Image 1 (tube, rainbow, N blue to C red):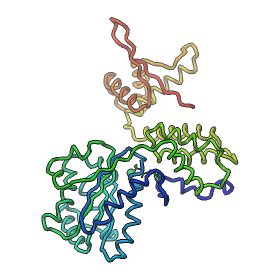
Image 2: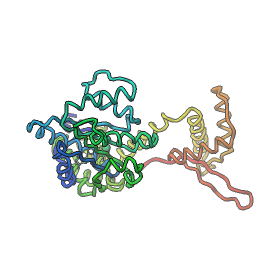
Image 3: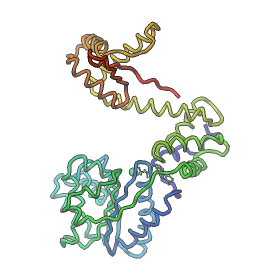
Image 4: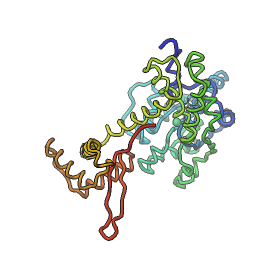
Length: 375
Ligand SMILES: Nc1ncnc2c1ncn2[C@@H]1O[C@H](COP(=O)(O)OP(=O)(O)O)[C@@H](O)[C@H]1O
Ligand SMILES: [Mg+2]
């Protein structure tokens, strides 16, 4: 292991490197917008697909900017909220208040939290709040986005002298456009668009990371180009590129290889897919799991009998197997119609394939099969 790896944590996607290739313009723009945040609040909307560097750039700019401003005696702080974890405006404000109180306990009602927040920001000339992955709040309900109104209105309404700048990151192109007009009137944003990374940039990102994480000569020359090409296909996602490189190294380590080759990259893709599938399955409700097991049981039986030259089964076959399994584990079975619905749902999740074949005037038959994994 030591012979290959200097520090594998550097290939974790939580690691933020000093240099962010391909995002030079965005870093300059963010810096320009936030540099005078103690004099004027700026609200910024970052739009781009996942893995395009939204979180990394804001964190970096704030990390660099705050010490500079503090040196100039500006009382300022930066608060990060990942709305995907928090999901409501209450939890988001709570996260901010907690950071303001150094992790100590904070009140449990909105009005008390709000009062605490107003009290705490008296200590600041300016704060920057980053509501990352804000789509998660919107998903909960439009009301949750009131927090944008609250934060952007406090000063204008005379509740504080602190300049509050709010940065949001979203996957949606039309997020700001679709905001309630009341929110939009006070929450005026400058938008920055994060385009997907090209293969070249992904390659640069991976080269930088590999240099920090691995000893030289460990990667075969074609490994980074291949990882970059795969990630470029998946809408230029740097997170996926880094995960693929890391998993490739892990696969190589597991096989006691001294070098990472493209075979390891290909195996790593399968491993990542399998991990994703098992995670997905672990979250399924019980009935779904039984139905999936029925599909697998039938597929297995059919593979053992080569006279069935495919592993396809009808809904009727699956339902019979499902009834038998439900009986065995003493779970109340539901109707065939319902099972058929669940099969389509799991097709949507990519856990199995449902092919509908038209049989002319006899109607349509669904054939269910298991997707074959491999490279
Ligand atoms: N330009 C870049 N240079 C180096 N690493 C990057 C760059 N952009 C993204 N990353 C890395 O890729 C991963 C995902 O980036 P992130 O900022 O979380 O994307 P987003 O917030 O757009 O989903 C992180 O590990 C980040 O450090
Ligand atoms: Mg992010």
